[in-house]
Length: 299
Ligand SMILES: [Mn+2]
Image (cartoon, rainbow, N blue to C red):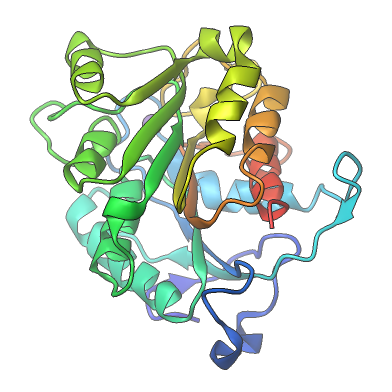
């Protein structure tokens, strides 16, 4: 158990963290994931509840089989679940400090952080920890984010750190490239910024109309990838329990195909955010757990 964590419920297929043998971990080997829940929704602007995301996504994870029919493969990815971060509700700054410390500890163990949010603001802290950790240069990393929104505002209601500004803060860290998929909601300021900076923008209509082209584009990405999935990329029909729902979104099969197109890529970090389910069996949690399951199968 890490210093700032508590463990309520482990993700399905995860191994007891006491079984970790750090001697075995070699960065050239297959990815070994370390799951961390971040039950923080202090920057949510519309529907609160993302603090319940980690718990409900883990609960939904017990619904899946270890064998994947479409891939004809049994899951054998090594994954440890460290439980939830100790957050300071309403205080992004203190929560971010705890998160950076804990992600650094996970990186020091040679594990790839797999974070379950929490609102989207947390992605910045994860990448900041990766930047500050020796050996990870953000300038070599492509950021792929699935999101209904661009999250590219410079400030939101005067705040620099928010779920609505998170991708601008990450852009400020100068990653190799940023690719947004499924977007359908933006301010004029954000779209102007994205175009000026030559970010790759694939709207939800692009996913409908040129899915194969996007899959080819993703397959051709060179170098390491950080993947951030805001579950509101799905249409509210498939993910109603989110902080900021937006109509005309993706369906789960499209997301599955896009995730599978990343097979063989080096994923250095992954987060899934904005699930705000409060009930067992909620479809939003189910779809979020399914995406984690798909990412674990990419090995
Ligand atoms: Mn977002």
